[in-house]
Image 1 (cartoon, helix red, strand yellow):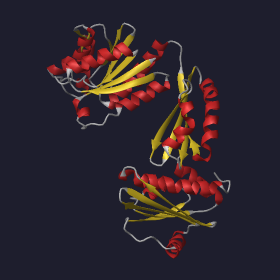
Image 2 (cartoon, rainbow, N blue to C red; image 1 turned 45 degrees about the vertical axis):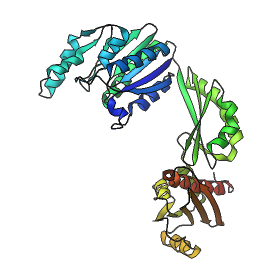
Image 3 (cartoon, rainbow, N blue to C red; image 1 turned 180 degrees about the vertical axis):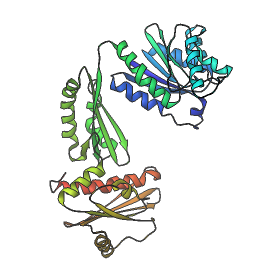
Image 4 (cartoon, rainbow, N blue to C red; image 1 turned 120 degrees about the vertical axis):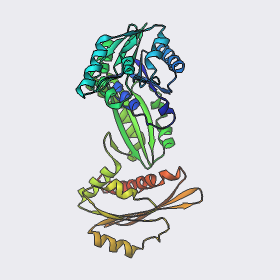
Length: 384
């Protein structure tokens, strides 16, 4: 089933409110094997909402909207859906009863504009809202369906879990699920990864996608099947091939984190770790906070002098650490110079590089680079 998500609200277009509904809905649809091929946002304008709905219903089997179901005149989703479908609105006395009962529970009386929420497009099936006053609705149109949900995240989520997902599962007929395997990589760029697996990214099934983060790359291999076991069978050979091509760049899977893998390897060696960082805004300390092997860190501004080997050793002694990871980030023109030193019982390993991306991402990129250097050094000991 192909679906799209339409969020409604001028406040979203102005940047006053961050849309959290789209990722919530998309994740829920993914779990039941529904493909989301498009997401969009439109302001509180009946004509533009109606146009977006007509277009969505023409190309997708399901359109899910959020927002615009409140009681005020700038909540126009009901009217826009009716216009898009060429129908009128009809009053649902049972919905009005629900709204009055909810107000009564709080010792309040609904105003006349709340009555607007009991009107739905003709032919729509209501979705009751036990956690708010705005009912949603489902309306089927030719071979497609439109599902309208409130914009309030808690109300939307209740309806999604209890009404929408079961409805879509029944509408799909034969049950399918989507299983994804995330391979985590570091120390390489997105283009490096793409160059090596671009033929796999063209596969129709399983699908392979690449997502870049500062200093880290995720490779997602996903398959649809009737059971998780069947999906894993489809994923397995592709995962094996990705691993073969990317080699030691891959540090983990699914919920693994680079800092978690490094921390576990240091702990397995029986070592403890201290850190020193300059110009990072504490990115290393933030990543390692909570790691059993980490004994603490020093954070300095970018213009602080580089720590000498004696200063590093003194900090290790104070912290009671067996090893120390030093990360320095300094701006040099349009780029950031990255310097890493890994001081361990094996000796001192130094690395220098540069980062030319957005300056705000330099600390995260540098922290990832430093941790990956440690990971690769420990891998030579067979610990990762």
